[in-house]
Image (cartoon, rainbow, N blue to C red; front, side, top):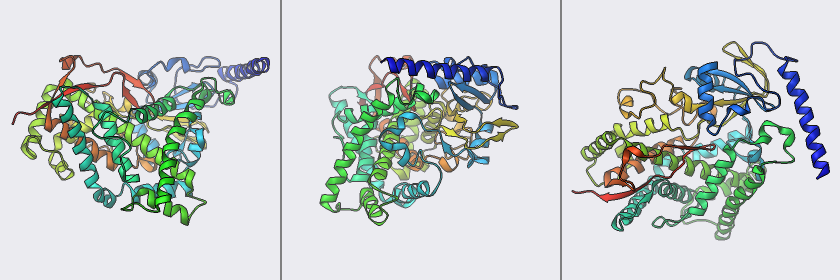
Length: 494
């Protein structure tokens, strides 16, 4: 303990000297972007608060959409406008394409094997090609269309069972089970949870814990000299959480190797075949990391977006009425929404876009880093700077969006703005080389689930007061509702 105390004292003294030199301009570069004055040692950490996406949006109003902060020892660039985001994600995409990896994601070597976190290069291109060609391509999505229809049908059947028992449904949890089983059937040809029971809670909690820990402010990320100590225990907890998920995947892989092959070739079969042909580049560890990316991103973000969408629709009865009328006129009351219906349901699509505008699942997208000094709009960005694109702030920018804080799907009925990374006013999935590869799946599943829930039931909140829904956000790498949305489905009168 004495050794640790002495070491900690030396490290803090070193940090103080370095911070003081920086504060008084020693080695200070010219033409840096504006930003709040940093304090010794902590820099601007005290300004983050409990909701950093909101705090940094407020600071950007004062200092501008290209803002530089000092978070401990880490220089951080915050982008808060569509124009600046276009500069970073499109015009200088390659220069900004490296990831800034949170310390906790080194657990089980995940960051060294993950398509999300590894640098652009041969391994990244191989993994990206596997994802885009064999999971998210148009032909693969078409081939698995029956799976998506089946899982939406199971979601509606679960809600109907709750309706018959006059019980409420935890919308986020139900959506999580649906997304989880869709991915598990696509990858492993089996459900990982019972679609008709309120199960899968443990897996949801583990995934939620991973997302929360990764998004939590970590002293090690701001003071790298503390890496060996891990003072908040974030890496230790992520070792445990990630380990639980890896154990599940490993058991499924071993089971498949004993079986040799599934009844119909799935993603796991494909990955094992690629691994046999190219064991050095695509080994078992890389396969597990890819599956972890898919399950964590594909379940948590999809279920959270559906929960926010249902919340907003319940808060806005006129939106509910318009959505139900469109569904009734286009496909008929009480029917499931199928993928072929989506092009005929523009208002439903607008609800999804408006939800993603005001509640982007990942408020800062995934953090980036510049490997070399560069310039943006005349400002010098130092080498090694972390880059945060505040998609939450851009989606609520009052210079872009009329009545920016109000939920108005109608705004997209006369607008060509889309979520596919070409319109920087709305970038919930990112843009450029690093755009989320799961975008095509999400834009199918979210409106299918939402439309089917609205077209098969009326919904009553537990307190019966739609206007009093608590909209408090819980910050992590994704933004969750702090209080789950629970509502009782009521059968439609035909």
